[in-house]
Every structure is written in C-alpha cells, then in structure tokens.
Length: 243
Ligand code: HEC
Ligand code: HEC
Image (cartoon, protein in one colour):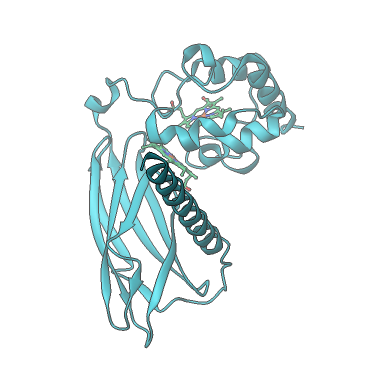
C-alpha cells in the first residue's frame, strides 16, 4: 500500500513537472514573438489618459479597456510599460471578437517629479502592437521626503539595483543603473547631464548621492548597489565622455 502511494506520488510529481515545463515553453514561445511593425486590432480605450496632478509618493490605480476590434479571437501575449514603476495586469488575455477586458494599471510615483509620460505597449499573438500613453504631473510632496523608502528597495530594486551586479566596466555599469535617468552618454534626460565634472566630485556624488531621494547614495556602504571599484570605473568612464 505504502509502495503504491509512493509510486502514485512520483507519477503525479512527474506529471506536474512535465506540465510546468510545457508552461515554461509556452511562455518562452510567447516572449519570442517579434514585433511585426503592424498595428494590433486589440486597442486601448482610451489611448491617452491624463492623470493631471499627483502628489509625489501617491500610488495611483487606473483602469483602461482593451478592446478587440477584429473579427477573430486574439490574445494579449505581452504588456510592457516604459517604467516598471507601474504594474499592468488585464482581467483576461484572450479576447473574443468584439469583446473587451479591463486593464489594471498601478503607478507608484515615488521618486518622480514634474511631467512624466509613460507608455504601455501591448503585443498580440501575431506580433502586432498598440500603445497607450499615461501623462501625469507630479507635485512636490514634503511628506514624501521623510520616509525611509529608496529607489533600491523592494520591487524597484529589480531594475534600479540588481542590474549593477557583476558589471565591471564604466560603460556597462552606466547602462545598467544610470542611463534610465541621465540619458545616453550622460547627456541628460529626466536627470541632469553629467558632463564637465571633476573626477573627485563625481566620485563623491555617486558615492553619497545628492542628499535627496531623487539621487540616492550608490555606494554599497550606504545601501546602494556599487562597490568602490565600480564607482571608480564608472566615474572615469563618465569623465572620458568630456574628451
Ligand atoms: C522593470 C524595471 C523597472 C522597475 C521595476 C522600476 N523601474 Fe523605475 N525606471 C525604469 C526605466 C527603464 C526607467 C526609464 C524611464 C522609462 O522607461 O519610463 C525608469 C525611470 C525611473 C525614474 C525616473 C522618472 C521616470 O519615471 O522616468 C524614477 C524616479 C524611477 N524609475 C523610480 C522607480 C521606483 C520608485 C520604482 C519602484 C516602485 C521603480 N522605478 C521600478 C525601470 C524600472
Ligand atoms: C532614478 C533616477 C536616477 C538614477 C537611476 C540616477 N540618478 Fe543621478 N541624479 C538624479 C537626479 C534627479 C539628480 C538631480 C539632483 C537631485 O535632484 O538630487 C541626479 C544628480 C546626479 C549627479 C549630480 C549632478 C550635478 O551636476 O549636481 C550625479 C554626479 C549623478 N546624478 C550621477 C549618477 C550616476 C553615475 C548614476 C548611476 C550610478 C545615477 N546618477 C543614477 C536621478 C538619478
């Protein structure tokens, strides 16, 4: 009896594993769907959402619809938001012709300021895409500054902390954890240009931050992702852009 039960368990766990493998395959397969360059018949409604004024630190949840304007069933295989600071989850991913689903969007405005424009790109099973735009104006919130939160915590760390790991060259470190705010070749973007700094000033600012949570200390000693060697390599690379 015992033997039989064990056998049953082994069989069941094998099946589970096979199932998990096939699921992994499906997901991989979907992830490999290439952008066809064409517009999807799955469209956002509305396509542009103006959230106006938001106090920094507010978490905002909004809903938009995804409509299937085609004549066949289609599937949402991928949803990408331009900053992972937002989570996007539809009620269902398979949409019958003429049908719709609700897309739940969560935006965490911590660390943001001024006008921020975010896009959400949907890809269907044929690689066709459509885009929705969210606009928000983030107002200064003095109370958001006192907290202990940082860009490196929790879910934010997946993109703003973890990618620095194992990177050795200045260029690679910059591409991992700086470019999203300071722009290509440190020319500036959401955050200022990093050109024309002295090496020691640069090292100091990267190590200790600027004293605001918008630009936190990046050194490991202060809770950041970078060790001293990485900070030196990064600073030297940024300086080299001035030549
Ligand atoms: C999936 C990766 C990912 C995650 C997770 C993520 N970010 Fe970002 N973040 C980015 C990228 C990429 C950009 C560059 C701008 C863009 O593409 O929207 C960015 C830009 C920013 C900016 C600059 C302003 C802006 O929105 O453009 C701030 C501030 C920021 N992130 C804070 C956060 C915070 C706080 C969290 C956690 C709540 C977080 N991020 C989670 C990838 C991510
Ligand atoms: C989430 C966005 C964000 C990321 C990521 C980020 N910074 Fe910044 N950084 C800022 C902002 C915003 C400022 C402007 C000063 C402030 O508001 O505190 C700034 C300021 C600076 C300054 C001071 C510039 C000056 O002229 O005063 C330096 C140097 C700097 N950052 C370097 C870096 C480097 C190097 C990285 C990557 C390790 C990095 N930053 C990553 C947002 C960011």
